Length: 177
Image (cartoon, rainbow, N blue to C red; front, side):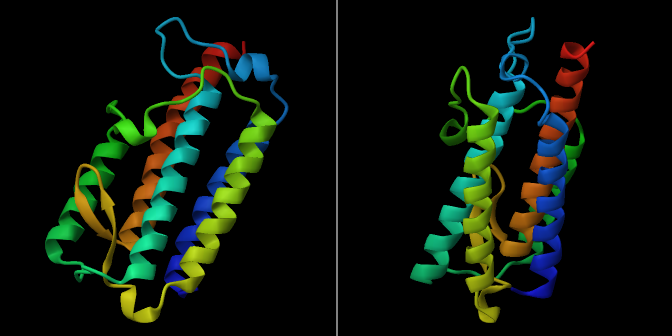
């Protein structure tokens, strides 16, 4: 794997594992408890994060395999990536794209953890298989900002994770008193 991608992937994994370890001792009933405002539960948020990782990994894998319509990442893509980062760091709520908005009412934390492990193992394999000549190509199309390079994609995944991590922590504070 490219060293820069590996650094970003390892940071993403460290963040995920820290969250999962933090939630490990909590009961599934609590993790599936809906807040008064009807927002996603902790497990629903985790399910959404898994869906995003899964769809992103699948998209990148297909782009790398087909090698069709791969455009170099431009200043415009970099600017849009920066805008996406700022939007996710703003704390503002956004409607999830339809493909990753449907989450089950309840889930088992242990099953979610295993599923996320599998998705991340696949992601690691896909990242390892990306040839050097594709590192500057747009391998992912974000539903709102469009094409991103693989480095920008990993930055998006980290920013997206951090965005939801704040929500999980806020919800956890309300539930665990």
